[in-house]
Length: 283
Ligand SMILES: NC(=O)c1ccc[n+]([C@@H]2O[C@H](COP(=O)([O-])OP(=O)(O)OC[C@H]3O[C@@H](n4cnc5c(N)ncnc54)[C@H](OP(=O)(O)O)[C@@H]3O)[C@@H](O)[C@H]2O)c1
Image (cartoon, protein in one colour):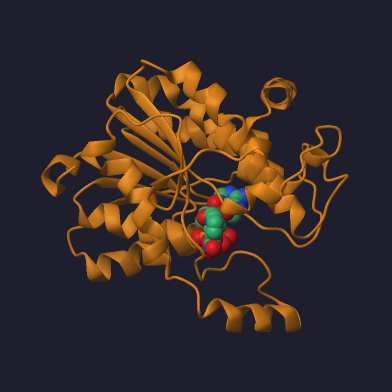
């Protein structure tokens, strides 16, 4: 879309206060969109909004404080968005965590399963009617190429029974991608498109940032892409006119890429879908 046509389009970006999300907010704001920066922390969100306004004086950015760490908090965030925005044109599910230690939330779910899989799964459902009513609308799930290393076991993964500091992140991103074809089928013809994207290997706060290994990672990460580079493909998917009808696809940066076989296990996807629905209902 041109800068002109992004005007008045309401674009919700989760995890908008840092890293790739903040760069996505900045890019969309520069294009004239009304951007809703979702941050779990008010102060970090306010700082990000101020930073962006310093470079784009007329930026139209709202801060919405919302946590994706539990089922109840995700419901609450969706309700805040529905209460505040009569139209939502773009939802970018960007927030993500790479936990190095097993941590369960109050639902008994492993935190990255919640933030990386269940929260976007929930937001896509809870905001769908509003997106449909605002169509044409787009959802972009920020995924990760590391999903290919995932091995999801539904009796273990959601609850952290198979926690591993590297594989767990991959597992949760695989969970999200397993549901992509089913979610896309459900949305087909609704005027809302859904695609997923690996944004590149980007120097952000993600992953190990503390202790001696944290310092080593910081050094290694200096050679990685910038958050602005990481924002390019997600923003393109959310705005490019040539992608108006592109739906249900996975992109490695800007390249449409078939999902690896491991993400095409339709039986596992159905089971995960049902489990995700049960978890949401029973919370
Ligand atoms: N960096 C890479 O190389 C890379 C590669 C592939 C995919 N990705 C994906 O890109 C996305 C953005 O990551 P990033 O690299 O920009 O990492 P980041 O700098 O750590 O940013 C992650 C964002 O998610 C937010 N977040 C984490 N837990 C949350 C929760 N419970 N509720 C609400 N927000 C929460 C963070 O908030 P706080 O600031 O409050 O923690 C932060 O705003 C993630 O989905 C990640 O998996 C990144």
